[in-house]
Image (cartoon, rainbow, N blue to C red; front, side, top):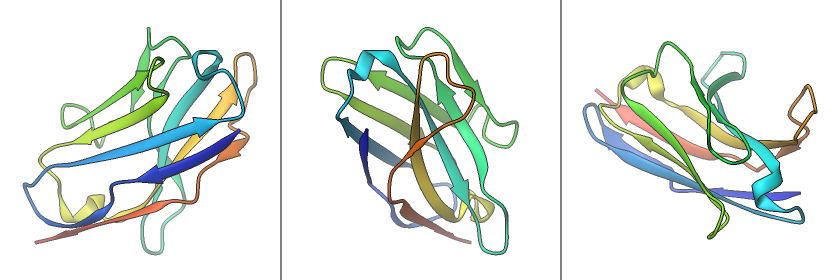
Length: 118
């Protein structure tokens, strides 16, 4: 699976940003997908996940109520709507995917940088 993330940029605290990720090489509706991030000096962490058909989602506590993950199985696009951004959301954001039944994410995009200024 080839993943391509986009949509990062420099915003101010309180602003919104929408990340997108396209996938190819696998039936989009058969892969579970997620967004991860790695901030400066931090380990990579999962931000949000969504099941193959979009029926179930997961959010890290730090983004609940502010971020929304969605998966369009017609347009083959994974999105992350980020509202009320905070400086601590500054990170490189990665989209990732795994086949249904896999324990770990095995496919990774190249990352897109989100910088939130105070």
